[in-house]
Length: 302
Image (cartoon, rainbow, N blue to C red; front, side, top):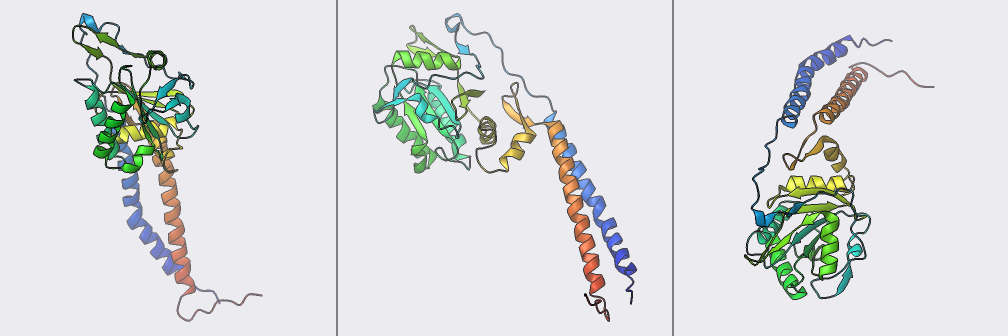
């Protein structure tokens, strides 16, 4: 005996008519809004002329540079360490160049970085490492240890002590490192201070310079995106590859913005998947109701 499936097919079509317009509208509107955000113009940065005493000070973004792994520093415990020991080939490294007795902006950079790290779900030592190097050869491991304790207390994550390293060193190692990463600074005798740029420098787990992020305040989402980028998606969960695919660094905005083309591709692929799941669910629902019709006995199988 043949069971008529027409009522159930009709119901499935009616269900599809109800849900499909909303599904398409959700996918299309979401992709349109996000793409519009991605292509919105970014604000430019100031190009004010520096005073004469600051000539020669600046930042050369040397993407692809590899500072010598043999450079010797001292950690916050006073132990001699090689720079290369902080590159394990896997976790990216966030490098900051400061001097702790700076009377102006250096402390603001580290305060800003600490607030950024507080706003991230990741912890130094797990998904990435932070290496803070003083470029003042007169600063000591004791001072570095004091500052490390202060910033770890501000961060509120004692376990980060294993992943945030404070180094001091001699002129030769400092000069070699700053030259390699394009960090140009100078001692201003009249003011008795160092003049220098402010930036985060992101290196791969192999020790290659991959990204710069100038400034003194940093959005947690931007820092996280940079770490994902320099690790080629290895940092964090596998879902970070999706984030890496849909974001692109905008040097003018000094931030990560949505990549319109990739976002549209991803949204299109997501729409296909959602529609496929939707139609499979509708077919299974109709088939289940057909076989469950009153009085129907499934044909025996041989």
